[in-house]
Amino acid sequence: MSMPLAVRQMNEARVLARLLNVGPMSRADLARELDVTRSTAGSIVASLIEAGKVEEFDPKAVPGLNPGENHPIRTGRPAIQLRLIPDHALFLGAYIGARELRLCVVDFTGTVRHSFVERLPKVYPSPEDIAQRLADMVTTFVSTLPMPATVRGINVAVPGIVDFGGDILRAPSMNWRRTSFREMLQQRLTGICVHRLVNDANAFAMAEIQRLDAERSQEAVFLLLEDGVGGCVQSGGQLLEGTNGLAGEIGHMPVGDGGHCSHTGIAGAFENYVSRPAVLAHFSNLGGIGTTLGDYLDRLDAGDPLAQTVLDVWANDLSRGLAILTVLLNPERIVIGGRVAQLAKRAELQIATCLQQRLMAETPPPALLVPEAGEAGPEIGAALMLHRAHFEDFGPLGEFQSLSIG
Image (cartoon, rainbow, N blue to C red; front, side, top):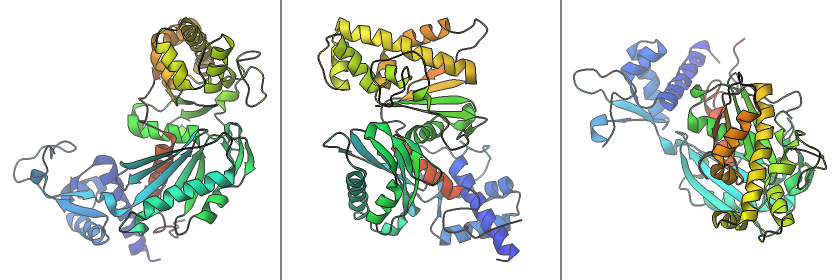
């Protein structure tokens, strides 16, 4: 590869990254941002337009668009703007939950375009069954596209530990151990690359970082409260993986001697107190009526005193774990997601009060954030991870893979 071509490809990647991160820009804006001449910027843009990645538009013809929103307002006729073409590429993300499969589609601009959900008919489905169901969901969606080749692949978020080789080491809520799920899924998908399996908490964190704007915070902890408790730690703007990719197993953190349930056999693990099975087991042990989280929440909202007792204990147990994370990591924010986060929505003040009581007066408590349901699911984060990889290094996947500069 000649250097002029290498430089050109790097500049094309820089243009795409600026349009993604900043929004619509003119050729003159891009020339200033990239510190190149206008003629060079024009040549790069022409190549991207020809490739179907970028398009021109007149900002005056777009209702509600402020041409000066991202750049200083200048006098004179507004310049023709450039933007990414959303349909140039699509990125799939899936989440294997204990009770359902979720699939989402993110376009070239990083916008969620479609979401699909399939309920699972039984507890502990086999990996082969899930691989086939997910492959069918993907195949059905791709069959609706006029250009299936726009799909650049899929990432899958799983409720368990994934090693660097892409295998699932363990997923207690699914009763899976040492499962080569990526290979299983790839065998059932033709023409769609299965890029990565990712831990569901890491995927949730990626979705939240994107939604909240990563520049707002570089130090954060993300908790995903489902049938287990997943965790992810952001430090210095990076997600910590640890020596073997096992960092962030916050659900296994010991906070007591027992708990209300145990998926892992670890006595006193955090998830034994605050996961969905823990909530339902505690409610049942007190004599509460209901077999699902929805049943419990209905009883809670109806004023059932047993349900309120469970919430009070749950909030106290959650704050105990949050206090440990606070004194160890000193995060700016702790983001709580997953289905069980609905309890946190109903006990935000109580959780904050209990947390403050467990900290030294000089220790600032982190901001506690609970996103609305559906705002930042692991499937969205999985798709965004693939989308992000598309723009990293020297550009979109499959186009600049061979470029190496020593």
